[in-house]
Length: 160
Image (cartoon, rainbow, N blue to C red; front, side, top):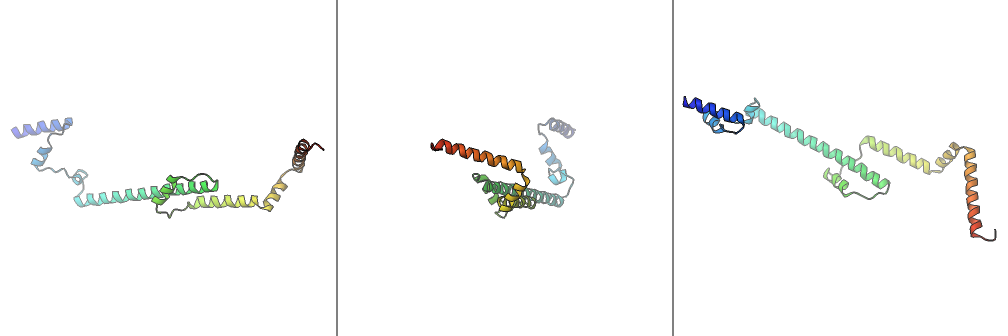
């Protein structure tokens, strides 16, 4: 009877959250094994823990790779637009193992942009731009430029 009363009181204290009764469980033969708490055998629980750790490592590696790819893109854009370098981006690329490239989609976009810029810079690109312009617009620009040059020359040269 005393054992039953002691057990009931310890269960009530444990339900209140005071943690009493943990010694009681060990005396009664109960275990605080996490595998038993999850309804698994010890081996199953260990396998489950290994699987969880492997999945976490894979997610962390994929996350680190994505961060490095983004950093690589930022480095590329900084080089393209001649902006100051970022030490943080370089560190992220090094953490990923320095074998980081731009993702395929972004690489295609960058290559297309470079081709467009090269086309615009070439003489053919300039000629195509002229063809797209209205002839009247070209005449107006030429006359405005000529007028500006003439005014500048008149201001600098008193002979004219």
